[in-house]
Amino acid sequence: MSPRSASVNEELRRRSRERLLQATVELVAERGYEATTLGDIADRAGSARGLVSYYFPGKRQLLQSAVHRVMHLTLEAGLEQEPRTDDGRERLARAIDAILGLTKVHPVLMRAHMAGILQAEGFVQCPEQQRLSWLLRDTMERYGSTDVDADYPMLRALLMGAVFAALLPGAPMEVPRLRAELFQRFGLDWELGNPPPQGKPLAVP
Image (tube, rainbow, N blue to C red; front, side, top):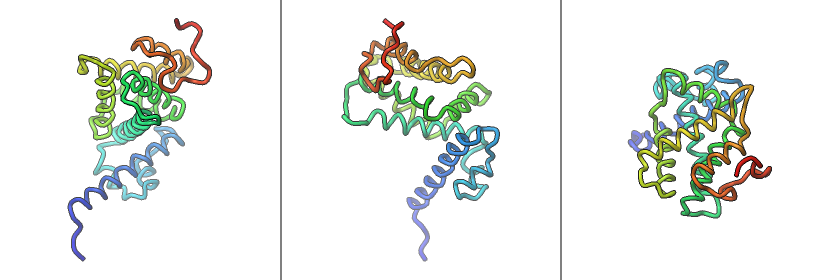
């Protein structure tokens, strides 16, 4: 049997890594971060336990990469939903709705992610984070930003703050209110993107 080509090996590594990321998402959503072990993740992914350490230096880094993958895929799906559009204001509205929507779909996962970011490790520079960053930067460029290097970090900070506020234990803010504030900040009409069914908060002009 001839040895596998470099491209085949690379594809196998990519799939193995993605199985670990998906297993992390599933287990943390089911059990929480603390109750999920690296062994559990490897078992769910059908991988050898040594592979987890090969791809990721630790559980916190694995979680961040897994969440960045979810955020990237969710954002990508939101931006490219039908009808497809190149309108920058519509794409920014879709981006905001996609990220805020994660607080409803993956609350446990996003709380664990935000807690990890506030610890010493900060952001993990991984392929998933880079893809997410590229999509958000591209969104700001299409929106019409004349200084993407300044405006992209601001968008990222505002989205992170909104996610934190929506998931704050004991005192969460309603997503429609957070959406309205973000839309007002960027001069977006409420009807753009995917408006929530309950409508616009009355207190927002």
